[in-house]
Length: 196
Image 1 (cartoon, one colour):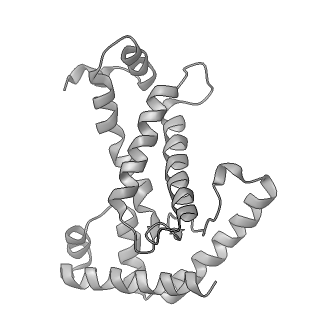
Image 2 (image 1 turned 90 degrees about the horizontal axis):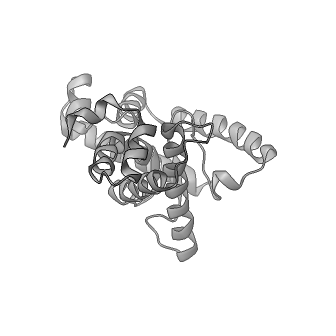
């Protein structure tokens, strides 16, 4: 992969890609893959697979590369983030319609988005968004109250992208205890979702 890409803005790279430089897409995919992973990890899927969501997020990223217009007020980073989010929410909505269990219900665990969604955020009106923000606060408080101090620490590190080994090292625990904590967290959140 060419190193000189780092000297260009994303917007300039998109222009180069459109002029025929095929390596740009590969470079941008690698550059933004951590963002896709982070967004995918924040969506808790009951019985789901984060890797499936990462693939959906990457599709959103590729759509952003194709559709981005430098004339827009938004930067490529902002536009890509929106496209990735839409692709993730769309995948969940499609799965809901098809009644597939892994994507049938989900809970966003992002610090800023602790909310159960049943429709795409892009389709919400301002009033619904205010109501959802209040629901976020309530659900987040309910989750935090159900988790032990240790489980809250594990969840926070996990959502920041740390793997089991890193979490274990940071908290001075074994990877098995981290795995057990994440299983308990999933069970508690699943129970909370089912009682809503």
